[in-house]
Length: 542
Image (cartoon, rainbow, N blue to C red):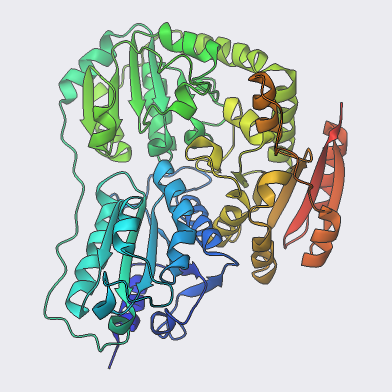
């Protein structure tokens, strides 16, 4: 007879899950019983935090396409990355990754064991025991479900997947006691009906406001990343510049209406201030995009219209009109209602001026990093760039035009944890096996998750690990100096990355931080099919 653990694996496979990340333990043996005979591939991380970041990167890359097609069914919602962890330390280790996923709206399903159901909450001192694991995870996850019997399993899975379909995505947790995992699966209940998202809004009011506008503007966030075609059609219909937040980079690549620059920059804020109608699509108007230095606040936006899937996000900022629903559902209806007449609002001139001013504003150091990113993009067209909190990522978040919707994402845009990029790049490569993945990380952040490099080796993944080495935490060092604080703790000695790459059995190159040296190193490693590493010496620059 099928056990609860085996049925859980079957349900994941039935819902299209192809990969799970995790580390097996004595507390999850029964969960793993069903994996060997299933179509699901198990990828063994070296730490549960790594498993969580891999699941996050996997989920984000699943939502990435070269064209940004809106072909996915809205009713299906985004597919989550899935991680299996043990009770206790396995759960606490993955919490940071879950918090990162929540900050970014990345769909993640964490399935854990928990101690025997008869011991929960009694403090009996069992191995890996937490006082209340379910309550702990509930503070980070969108929802946490506890399966106490076979009857609870199917409703818990159905509700977990409905979380991904009906609102802003994030981490969801299911825990199953060890004794329940091995029980025969017997269920008399049926899961609730699947949620099918619908959208209803006052089209006439939205159209009227957009038609009256003389200087309309579009803000595109991560919620619009699957809308490349319809976003372009709407922007051209309105003749409106499109400012891309960090998670929207890659939309409308190289289009004359695109402004791939941070709304925190003065030049971009000036473009917003000069607009008389702002249409915000799938952007939470968060601090890392709109007020990076935490000193100016969110820009004032005239005639603000917001479309967002999350009612809580919509409630946080005043707007003239608010539409709660998926952007990919709303845009076709809006375009149809606007009709065929194309407005003339000087959009290309306004966008060009903002791009030029923004590129100048970021300064020479960031412009050098941006030029390195452009060199990387030209060497590896339509690659997925996965970043950590490091200099080239900061530069790209300020100004960079990627060539693939959903193909630029990093930890610096939300929760800001270090060590994200290595495992997340591995997850992205598993989600898009025919795509080159570029990992952008600093020497400090790399040391958080270095063991996960061996996962890329085990799986023979085409990930190029680029390590910017300034022998420390450069950003924190600068912040301390700027604040008049003596620099302490910012100079951890980095490993010798050449020997590290050799120990992992991957090709290695080292280069100066110049365009010529960087391009040569990329050329040397461009044609390999497995993982490789390039160290960029930040002390050796132009």
